[in-house]
Length: 238
Image (cartoon, rainbow, N blue to C red; front, top):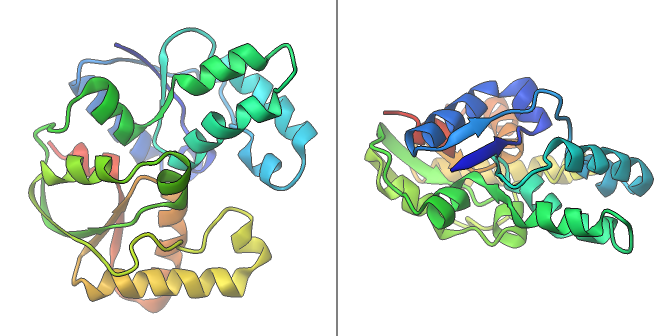
């Protein structure tokens, strides 16, 4: 199965190991993985800030960069949710409407691709430790992802997964929300850290490094010692 990697901006710049670990898992599953080094952003930041014209230019480049029939897989429900739910709206009644729809249909978040397309949930991973899981808003509400990461984690040998209180509550990041409403964002992040710490977990796992980046910042300020990991980091421990 041919897969084109879409690597979000913050993963590319700050957490490249997540991308390498995703490749490791996909290749173990038998996928042929390709990466277009000319790719850039999906356009979400500009779109969310109200700059739809500028966003459309970036999105047009995305359509060009990911042309073809291969599956597009990304380690970010946030980016996938944007492509899937807003590209058709952005390109409505335009010459690119059909290609935008087809691109959205073949774009998948990492965990849902493993479960629903590859239909594999056990990669022989071993990870010793106690962890809790954070449902990102994009995963839950835009991609309808809930059970898929948990199903994958349940197959990891040595991993004890415990649920935190208010697990579906936002961590407070929300892209530009964290900048525009910093005090509220920090308070929400602190609450998420407290709920995760109350489980006694050593690790906090999620599908989205944007959430984990925010939570980790709050966590380091509080000094709880909780470690954040992307799902791909855990599944690649084989």
